[in-house]
Length: 167
Image (cartoon, rainbow, N blue to C red; front, side):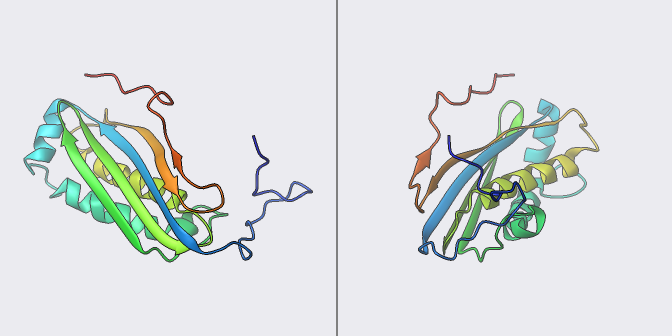
């Protein structure tokens, strides 16, 4: 395992200097889910919640979150993103699955932007549904893959994280 790059030789926090790195296409895909009561999922799916279209509002929130990652995570580089896509699916019997894909041409990766996009979308689902279900759980937020940069491609193996239990 390598050393932590956000600390200098004295142990002080620092923003990593990426000025010498080559600008390359960087992509990251992250995912997560919001588990809820099946009745809540039915309301969400049928657009029966008072706050409106939960999936579309959450998609926009996730995109906005990705764009503001550098403001939220202290040592993240503020990045100009070239693309952010979010997929939100109501999956029977009891959860919303969220996936984000983020792309940029730059000197540092976009893993944090993808993770913030997923987390922000999940939090928005929670916010919009909490009036009918406070038992919701945000879970399984994780990096699925990343490409580009000095370390190349990373893909999560199916064995790395156990599948969520049904029901």
